Each structure stands twice: as structure tokens, then as C-alpha cells.
Length: 139
Image 1 (spheres, rainbow, N blue to C red):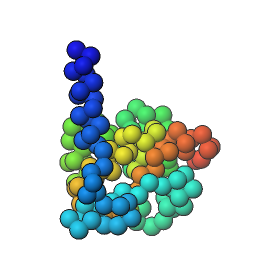
Image 2 (cartoon, helix red, strand yellow):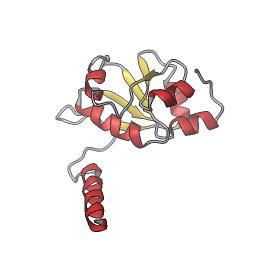
Image 3 (cartoon, rainbow, N blue to C red):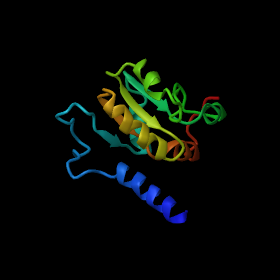
Image 4 (cartoon, one colour):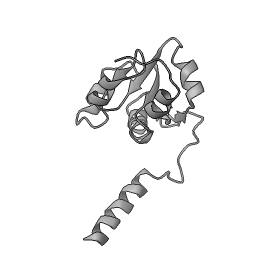
């Protein structure tokens, strides 16, 4: 049983691992799959004030209700219909995506890159880093 779990875990890690043909994180791929750029808290702070930028919080609604970045929208990464929620958003905007600490935002931005979003930024420090820095919070 333990061996089976280890094999399954290894398969999941391989599925998320970069492939040898993956594009660098600084350019748009030829197959129109957007490349996601990781950003710091300082970059997040500057970028979230820019026009045509959406702060997308992919934590659960309960986490979001407990406190979130002012003006952020919430779409829970774990929703079965995550893709349908993403289809309602304006793909031409710049999306700053975060979760609690970077795991869900990385997965969400990878998915969004396959759905036609052109400008994706993963704030992998997430809510943990943002709230520890005593930044403004909405509830």
C-alpha cells in the first residue's frame, strides 16, 4: 500500500515537473500558451495599482472572507468548474494570482495559461507574506 502511494505521488510530481521543451518564463510561447512570471511582494504592490490589472485570490471562500487584498476577486482553485469561472473573466487583463503560500496559485496560473490568458503573474509569497507585511486588508 505504501509503495502504491509513493508511485502515485511520484507520478503527480512528474506531471507538474517542467518538460525539456518548456519555454523560459520571459516570453510568450509559439503555441500561444502564456508563460507565468513569478513576482515578489514589492512587484505585486506596484502592479496591483496598475490599470487593467486583476488581483485573483484562488483560496477558499472561507479563507477569502477572513481577509483579502482590497479589490481582489475570489475563485476557489478547488472548484470543479474552475475553468468555467475563468471563461467569464477578461483574458486581455493582467492577472496577479495568489493563494496562501504559492501552491494553488502556481497550479491555477498553469491552468489559466492553457485557457488563453496572456498576462499571468504568480505572487507565490501569497496571503501569508502579504498579511505579515501589514498591508491593507479587506474583509
